[in-house]
Amino acid sequence: MLQPMEPKTVKLAVTGKRTRALMIVYPETLSYRVVDCSRRLFCRIHVSKNCPPYCPIVVAAKDFVSGRREPK
Image 1 (tube, one colour):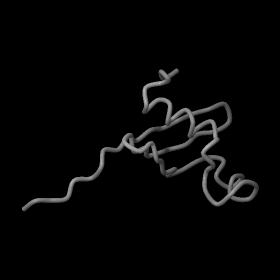
Image 2: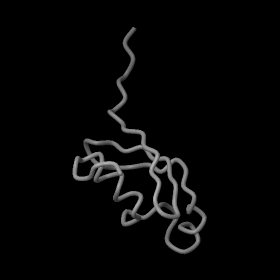
Image 3: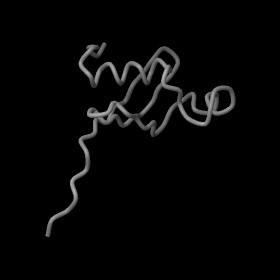
């Protein structure tokens, strides 16, 4: 029996100065889904319903997946 293939995903745990997040990034489209974030409540109240694309954690994850940044 054949099962549908999931798109390739990269699961990351990203840590910044004051933020920790678990993310899933799809390398083909560089779209992302934040599974858990320590600043999620702040972003929901002050920014939007989801993590914004300019968040340093999201930018670091996308740069790592695309090969522009090495892990520190």
